[in-house]
Every structure is written in C-alpha cells, then in structure tokens.
Image (cartoon, rainbow, N blue to C red; front, side, top):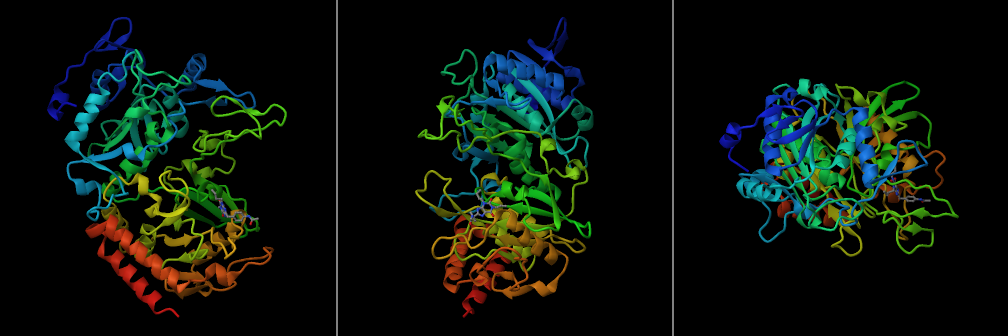
Length: 579
Ligand code: TSX
C-alpha cells in the first residue's frame, strides 16, 4: 500500500462516454460522483490495487437483490429450495467453512496497544498482533490484482438504523455477490447511507475471495476461494479491515465479527461506550406491564440462541428478542426420500456421515423472527438492567449468583470459562477461558479493555447489575441438576426481582450473592436438589480461583488493572475462611 501522501495525490478521472468509468474500469451501476469524496478516494485506491474488470455501486434495493440472486442461480452458486418462498441453499467449497483464528491479525504500531504482556514462553490467546508496516506490505502484495476479471461491488451499510445516533457506517468493497446478498440481510444497505455519511468517518472494509481470473485453483461448488492464503486483518487506528481468500460469514461479512466486535471495541474505547458480544432480550411482566432488558454473554455451546428464543414454563413474562443473530440449520426430512446433504449427496437417517456441516448457517432477516422486539429498530436503543455472564461448568459453579459490585462483576467476566469440545487441538472436553465471551473478538489489549469496563463506573450513572449463570451443573452420576431451557425463566425471574431491589431473596457467599433457599420459583418442577445446585465446594473454589489467577498472570500480566487483583485476593481470602 502506498504512503498516505501518495494516496491523496492519486489521479482518478471519471469518464462519461457511454458508461461511467473510473480510470478505464467501467462502472456498471450507480453514480460515482454521488459518493462522498473520501469514499470516492477509498474506492479509487482499491480499484487501482485490486484491478477488477468493473465496479458496481450497490443501492440495497429489491431489484438489485433479485438481479444478483438470479445471477447466482444461473451460475449454480444458489439453488432454490421449493419448500419456502424466497429461500435458497448455497453450498460452499468444503474447505471454506470456518473462521480462521490462526490467520486473523490486528495491526498497530505499538504491540501492547493490541495484545497484553503475556508471560514469557506462553502463547497468548487474546489476539494476534503484527506491526502496521509489515502487515501493510503483506496486504499490498496479496491484494494486487486480486479481483482481476471480476466485479468489485461497493456496499454502503449501516450497523443500526440508518441515521440513528448510535449507528455506525461502513463501506465494504467485495468481489463476491453472495457476500452482497448476505450483507443486505444482516445490515442496512441503502443509497441513503451516502447522504447520512456526509464527510463523517466510516469503517473501510475490503474483501476478496482471492481468486482472480483466469483461476489458478479448481473451483468447487461454484465457490471460488483461496483457503491456503486466507488472512483476516484489521488496522483499528485507520478503521480498516482487509479480508482475503474466504467467503465464510465470519471472514467475509465484515460488518459482523470484524467491524461490530473487533473494530467497534476500539471505537467504543475511544468514544466511551461498550461494544460487546451479547444478546439482548426484553422480559415484560404480564401483570404490571413493566419490561426489563437483559444482556447476556456466553461462550459457544452454552445455548445463547436457545436463551434468546426461550419459551417460559411458568406464566408471568412475555419474552422478546432485541438483538441476536441466528445460526442453526433447518431441515425438513422425508422418511422415504431422504434429504440432500451439505456435500450435495443423498442422505438418509442411517447414513454414516452428518447431513449438515456443524458450522453451517442460515441468514434470514431479523424482521422475520417471530419474537423480534418492536423496538429492535429504535435508534435510541434500550436500557439494560442486567448483564449475565455464563459458562458450561459441569462441577462446582452454582446455577446463578449476583456479583458484589460493577468492579467485581468485571472480574467475574474476565474469568469466564466454559467446557468446550469445539477446538480440534484438544482431545475430549476441556474447560477453556473465554473472557467476556470475547476471546476471538478482542480489538485491543485485554487488560486495557478491562480498565475501560471499570471506567464505565462514574458518579451519577446507574449501571446494570452483573450476574453469572451455569445451566450445566451435574451430580456425581453426570445427571443435570437443573432442567434448563424454558425453566431458565425461573432464574431470569429471580434476576429481575434482584434488579428491582428485593433484598430478602439473596444471601452473601464468598463468590457473590446466592439465591436464598426457596427464593427461586420451582413450582411444578418435581425434585430439585437445591443444596447441591448451589453448593460451593471449598477445594473446588480454591483450585478454580488459583487457576483464574494463573490465567490472568500468564495472559494479561501487568496489564491487569489492580482492582481486579484486589477482588481476586478478597475472593481467595473468603474461600480460605470457608468451613
Ligand atoms: O441451550 C441450552 N440451555 C439454555 C436454554 C435456554 N442447552 C443446550 C446447550 C447446547 C447448545 C442446555 N442443555 C440447557 C439450557 O439451559 N441445559 C442443558 C442441559 C440439559 C440437557 C437435557 C436435559 C436437562 C438439561 N434434559 C433432561 O433432563 C430430561
């Protein structure tokens, strides 16, 4: 990439003869002159670098979506599914089915802006850093000519309602029209973005499948990609994201993990708010009409989607979801005909291989979610009363506890861990750290991120209460102690009553406030072993606290804010004093 000054001096002319042209690249759709000047510069710069054969400026309209859908069907990338209206399956190259953490970087000049001081000899798990110029050089080489023979789509998008005071604008350049279709489902793509943006800052997103024409690699399932060369890289101080080689959602729909989590966490740091990996739900008390909003952050495989879609087993609450993306695959199965698997083969119940790839997704508009909150598009947002952290913790950790304070809650969030089978490098199950459920999505030094959370606590601010839940505790026979699912409403009900200030339903313990025996509604549940569900085995907590301390020392070192150490020390002493 060229130096800043050169970019400013770069010459680009738009010729209006028959079609508009940028240099000699035809603009198939849209009026280049209409784009704000700094967007024109961005597009021109990367058009020159990536050398697409044409440029297509998207407007987010239905006609545009229909045109692109039609093209993708003709090419064979999309296949119409007959069962539902306007529903398509897209099979990727089987080699392009996951985010690639080992190929994900954040580039800054100062290493410790991005990653904490890790103990010598320990591999950091809270992000990968590369020096800015080194990364720029790599990107420069990789992206040169990467869109040859393909169309560069210019996608203006808004994260949040267009023009809303909390919304942020991005512009994604991509050579994948599949990515365009998904971006217009998951974000707001619209011509109006240009006038709302004006001269203001936008997040620059550059994406390529990394498969210029003539193709060098065999294309499978009409899904050109370049899995061997994938990189996902972020330049947070330039608000720039560059993604090469993959069309998988987390790698290619740059509004999602790259912008809304990694870059946004940096913007939030700079602007004084929190950008987090959480779902938001609203629970309305059907007697009083009062609504409480709760945010929850869990590592994967804890049932975050199930919680957002909860069907309460006790009366008293109406539940609606304000924000959450949905990621399961749906199948309808006909016993006689079987189905077609993700690899395009016939599949029946006794087939030895799975029908769906475990990481497969569906992408559907939030407006079609049956329990979407009417306020999901409110520009002002919703007031959060409680933040819930959680994990899959088979032993030792009670069903629910409330933290002592905001600071203490930040410590509990920093120590979130969960049983995981997801990581291929581990055989069997292992409890893995996923602090704040943000481990793969940290945009800057995790110690500084903790300090930023602590800094939220300012006089005159009413902060949410912070809780920790564990639906997954088992008895000595491995049987779940809590029925979970729709019965979790009983825990949420206790949390709401705590938020309303009911002091009579909690007792203090070394790790936080536990529900007083009988204070959670267990009507109709049959036998629940309350004592076991809420017990705090001394040895377990000694080990667990020691392990958490070790984790923070190893991974965050001198960047851990002192107050976090103070809370950990206090917890150690209280556990020590237990009988
Ligand atoms: O999502 C889950 N939740 C949250 C629901 C709102 N799961 C599934 C996790 C995989 C993503 C759960 N699994 C939950 C839970 O609360 N609890 C459990 C464990 C469990 C599994 C089966 C039973 C009970 C608990 N069934 C019987 O005991 C009959």
